[in-house]
Amino acid sequence: MNSIPWYPAAFISPIPKLLVASLSEQGDTVLDPFGGKGTTAIETILQNRNAIYCDLNPFAAESVEGLFAALDYVMQEKNGLENERERVISNIPQLDEVDEIIQTYGVNLEIKDWFHENTILILLAIVKLIHNDENEGNTRLLLIRKLAFSSILKFASSQQGHFTYITDNCKPVQKREKDAISLYCDKIEQIIQASQEFIVQYKLAYPKTDLKIILKNRKIVTGDAKDLSWITDGSVDLVVTSPPYLCSQDYIKTMRLMNLFFENRKAFDQDINQEIGSRAMRRRKSDVVVPKFYSDMKMVFGNISRVLKKDGFLALVIGKGKAKVISEYDIIADLIEILQSEYGLSLLFRQERRIGSRVIQVGGVDKESILIFQK
Ligand SMILES: C[S@@+](CC[C@H](N)C(=O)[O-])C[C@H]1O[C@@H](n2cnc3c(N)ncnc32)[C@H](O)[C@@H]1O
Image (tube, rainbow, N blue to C red):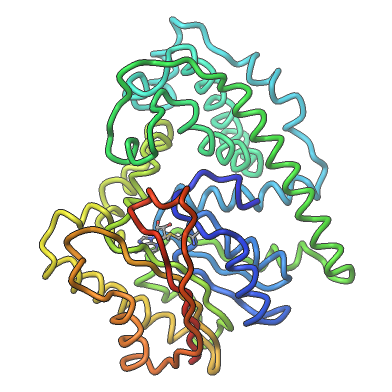
């Protein structure tokens, strides 16, 4: 499930798997306020705990709902995604219909800078299916199709470089046609297969409990981790989370291509300013960047300490980015000090972990700390 959504700088699933297993019990509530592609939420539900998820990035939260919609689809009648390839093919527009479709669905014309014209035809056929789902009120199929669509966009685009080329709006010089039908249909297949495996694993581990109940209890929210007022005081047993590594990523901008097809102005114009520790900050002065990061994180920590039960745990995974602007600061030591002295949490465990070379390029972070605190 974890490998389905395309999302940068996510947990490898063994991290939340182990933390959830060792720091909580069945039926407990586990929160991830920087939920990303939902790795913690998926592991939480797989271990029969209640999941609360929050992320500022609306496309991230929607993808996570797509994963849960897929579980629901597999458990129910499994109707609507069979013969998806034929369905896409029968909706492919003619080349001279493209501009009209773009206008009808409010797609941004900039897609022509990123995708080959033949690839655009396929992508618009999928967009049409998604809009039909919306018109028919078929939220489950809409979420699954949108999850598959958003997961393949980078690979369907003509930008072959690292994903930060997309984040930074570096358009491809040459257009390359991609087999978007196969990319999309393989992704749908992967979603269904992973959901089936998830259900088998859950049933093997918990033969007497009903997955539907734990799924129904989930809370997946697009929101700001600085304001968790929608979570009741003392209601959370465990927080497992990884905040942005200062100056390493622009998470909302990584969704640039998705935003061209399903424009969400609010996310791009307003939420970007709420993003904590974004990579864009690396151009500003360190005496602005670091205090702002600490004051944002204090608001998040205040919320976490309020919602945690007495004796509850906070597992924090955090690394230090390589941006010059933060080089003088020991960010991890400072955050530990803040949590201990201002929020009264005790540090129980600290372990450094090297990040695999494949991920090193991501903002230059090559190691991270796993910290466990208790309230
Ligand atoms: C390191 S990633 C977390 C990835 C996650 N652990 C996973 O496995 O997918 C940090 C996340 O924080 C989110 N974020 C940034 N600022 C935020 C804010 N103010 N409130 C909530 N989420 C925020 C980003 O959108 C990003 O998804």
